[in-house]
Figure (cartoon, rainbow, N blue to C red):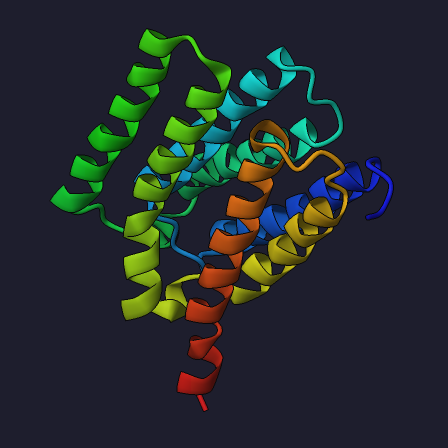
Length: 192
């Protein structure tokens, strides 16, 4: 294990991945699915609050970083007409399912239940981007996902209390970023 303050370093590195994706969105190279990215912005902010309520300090900033850059990416997708991926009905169905998970949290009032439901909701929100990454990896940024994977990996190494509120979201973020990296790096090999 490394010192917990490395969680903040990991969050900064993961944010660089998000900022790189933001840049590629502005120039029209990446085409974010707005449903996924909007929910990827909102869900981590909910987890950030749930973690802070339970006294999670350094690791909670990974959740904040995971939510802040996606919100910037959604805003940037409106700046460049080339940086928009048309949403499909499935995207909206998954969005409703994700928001239902958030609503269930408000009913339970349990911070760990909030984290679990938001993790499920975040995964549902990501399915449109996962599917797009399988079919059209060239519309995503494998470099951005790789940078974020490294950042969240450092966050995992900084976990000192392997309980749900400390570890679940960081491990999930690492896994989803790794999956997206592997799916989108295929575009490099397709172009050769």
